[in-house]
Amino acid sequence: MRFLLQHLKKYVIPAKAGIQRRASARHKSLYCHRLFNFSAFYARYRSRWIPAFAGMTIAFIKTPHFLMLFLALCFLPITVSAADAVSGEVIRLEDGREVRLIGIKADSDAAKTRLQSLINGKKFLLESAGNDRYGRVAADVYAGTDKIWLQGALLRDGLSFVYPPTGSEPHLDDLLKAEHEARQAKRGIWAKAAYADLPAAEEDKIHYGSFAFVSGKVVKAERIKNFVYLNFGSDWRTDFTVAIAAHDLHFFRKADRDPLELEGKTIRVRGWVKRNFGPMITVTHPAQMEVLAESFPLPLRERK
Figure 1 (spheres, rainbow, N blue to C red):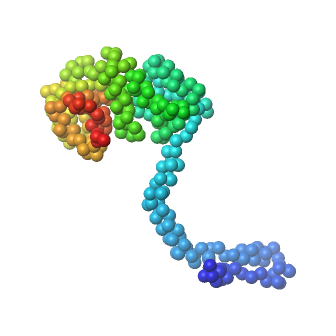
Figure 2: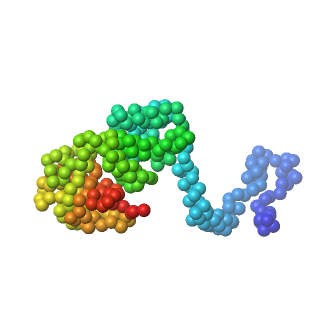
Figure 3: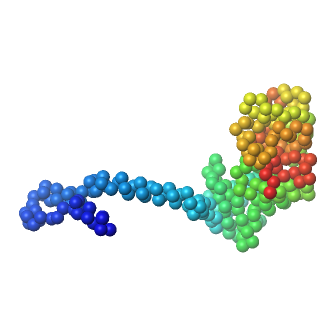
């Protein structure tokens, strides 16, 4: 403090009695300007204070306390009230905003009716993961004092499926386990032929432009330039194929799974079908594929 006061005296100009008694408007302006010369003061101390302040800020950012504070502010669950169910996967809040249940697809009337019954007269806890491309809040939603997880309820009832599993879903493992439970019990949509696995060997049944579940044995797995291809037949020009871009392989490495090791195994893959000579699904995350030969077909990702 003494150091600061000593140097402040160099920039604080004492008022002069003559200027105070008789001074023109110009002199008053000059006096007020020189009373505290901030520019000179800043030039004097910026080399000391600014680096010190910046250093303390960077040191705080690197601490776990800052990370916890940042996550708490960005992803803090909030309690809201809903007006109605727009569809089986979207609810409208009282303030007009729409919330999409992240990670699932449920577009049937039965799913909408079930969702409406789950939200009637209840408040909700939202764990937001940001907004989707339509500006809707994408979140995991928990209803009522019992905190019923809406995504899990719809999946276990067989009224929805995991869509699309990009790996960004906060509770992806729980979503897939709930879907697997309903699929094994043939509840809801899983009792319908429309949601049955399409055989990879019958490429004429795999329709372009549709979201499909396709299962079959991988005949050949190989990497060609910037893609890994899983071929389900002897002729890649006409048979069903799975393509994985090289820039997405880091997801498989993180899960300690090598797509090239799938040769000879029977798998299920989900995704949008496009035409690339024959039908093809592009896989961007290992959660889009399951090894059916395993006792419990979890996705191709790290087991817990």
